[in-house]
Every structure is written in structure tokens, then in C-alpha cells.
Length: 277
Image (cartoon, rainbow, N blue to C red; front, side):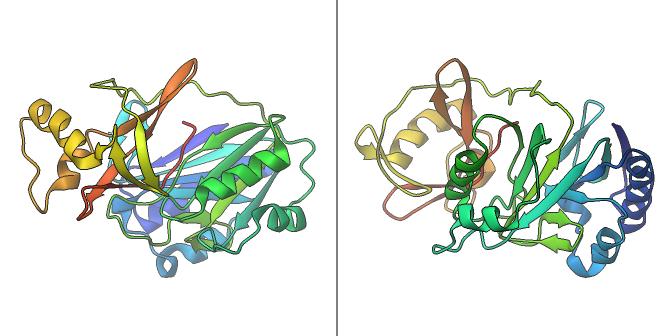
């Protein structure tokens, strides 16, 4: 596995690092994973020709920031070459209430018996990520190691953020089946501030009440004294992005979910994303 890096986040830089990574992958019959920063401002019109010209399977996503050699970057792109046989698949319509993802994958999936790692990048603003994840586990179970996370930006607007050999996509998920073994060696680093609290009423990605009280009332009582700031009518996410919710799990770190909007009834809308790393 090798990594090519473009610090500037330009179209020309992206073309260069994909070309280099693909050349290495071609030698070993592998694939290329591309991770790009949202501030690069890539668009389908701007980079689809680059993605479509890759001689090997290509997959990846656009994210608010990426980490490279210990540095947190707001601009830039990475192209990672993976050795060994690899297959990729794009699952569309990840917000379609009628979509049967198990049937879609059963029909479209390539032969993946030799795969040891499944990389999954969904559009973080798609509405049926949970149903999609459940379908993945129903099909593959625990016989494969899952790695991935929701792609997208912090703008709270859905736009093309998935990178495939067909171009940039939105409202879907990119799957990459790799022969190589993998493991998770990082954690999110968030520390517990207060809790636990019981979610006593919710609706999809909205938390209505915590311990039978309006969710925002409870959240504000904890966050404002610690942050030294008060929530105003237009700056909720400026503060809340540093204070996500944590969902407790037995024997491992918490699952983190970000509140991004207060509704009129005092409930909190949560970014419908997911991630294993």
C-alpha cells in the first residue's frame, strides 16, 4: 500500500496522484482509494473525466477535513493504492423509502468470496443509512471487516461527495471489496462531559426529549457553562460541533453523533451520518 498526496487540493494535483497510485496498483491488480477535502471544491463537471480515466477500480469520498502524517488538513487530496484483487460497487438512491438494498446488492454484487475488507462510504446526508447498514450485515455478517464513514461537508447541504470510477455521485454509497486484511487502530478522541441521559422520545434523526424534558433544554444546561457561550438564534452549530452526543456501547468507545439544528419544539436534529473509524 502506498500513499500519494496533493497538498493544494487542485484538479491537476488530483490527476497526478491518481495516475501515480493507479500505476502502482496496476502492477499488483489492486485499486485506488481517493480522499479529498470539501474545500477543494471539486465538482462532477470538474473532475469526472479524471475519475473515469482510472485504469483500476477507484473509490473514495469528499470529507470536511483529512489527516495526513499527523496533520489535520482543510485542503488537499490523498490517493491510496491497494494491492490484490479489488472490486467496487455504487449503490444509488440511499434516501428512497421504497428501495430494497438487500435485493439491489444481491443482484449487483460481484463475486466477493476472497474479500477480507469491505470499505463503505455513504453520502452522510442520505436518509436511509441505517437501513443500508442493516442490509450489509444481513448479507455479509461478521465474516468480513468493515471500515468506512459518511462522506459530505459541514455545509448541511447534500451535494456530490462520493468518488467512483464513473464520476462523482450523491445520495448513495460506494463499496470496495479488498483482499487485504485490515483492522481499526484509531479512536475518535472525544471525552465524556456529562451523562448518561436517556432518550425518551425520538423520530428518525431527531431527539425530542432527554429524560422526559425537551432535548435542547437539557443540552443547553450542560454545554453553555462549559463553552462559556450562549446559543443565539443563528450560531447553534458553531458551538454544537464541539459538543456531540455519545451513544454508549458495551466494551468499546461511544458512537458520536452531531446535533446541528434546534427545532421550534425544542428538539434537536442530528446529522444522519455513520462511521466505524
